[in-house]
Image 1 (cartoon, protein in one colour):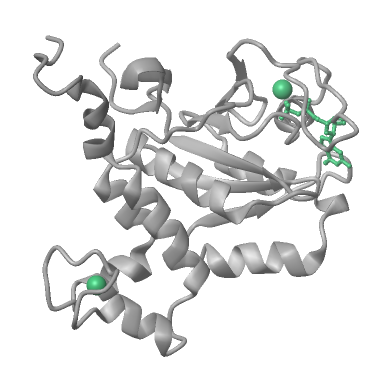
Image 2 (cartoon, rainbow, N blue to C red):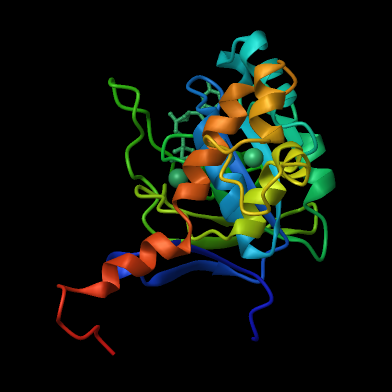
Length: 246
Ligand SMILES: Nc1nc2c(ncn2[C@@H]2O[C@H](COP(=O)(O)OP(=O)(O)O)[C@@H](O)[C@H]2O)c(=O)[nH]1
Ligand SMILES: [Mg+2]
Ligand SMILES: [Zn+2]
């Protein structure tokens, strides 16, 4: 089928590796017992870059401090966030209402986040193998292949192995959609190509200094901007004097 959305990452040598295609929703699955907001923001950017819509799914709500979940929801204002627990069943109905025909969604997130457990909970039976998290808190790679599962709620859900290296296959537009508040401020910077570093008349830094912009959001924004395509191209330059590979 022609691809109208594709979820990709940067593989070896800077080539794009497509992980899933023609999905409507990328579920950014974040384990509630070890939430990393920068990681969530990176995965939201990857979702926007794919052409799908991100929905953040916090798992293991039964082991999440309420203040941490509240902070995530506040920081990701404008993105649908579902707080869930496969153990207590919380949030599952909200997910079911999103995953109806003809929606296809894919689960993106670190291994051990509870993705396969979530699929089983939505299906209502142990369809996929799940794995206990290691003592050091990291997940095992129990899921080794991608799998598309038809859900009783009518939608389709793709389970994926945890993606170890998440070199983001992103675009400036995807970063802007992930950080709409920064993007809006940037329209008011004196220079159109302002990097919000040390330029005079920078509205983004001014907002940060005035307490109107979360410095953590700006830090995440800068990190993701720094990973954009021109940097990837640099690898193909080769040694000085040598022709670039064709
Ligand atoms: N307490 C709790 N543990 C969970 C929940 N969901 C998953 N787990 C546990 O997290 C571990 C990893 O789950 P798994 O589904 O294999 O993660 P995946 O690697 O993302 O597919 C397993 O030990 C699960 O039992 C939950 O809602 N609450
Ligand atoms: Mg799994
Ligand atoms: Zn600026």
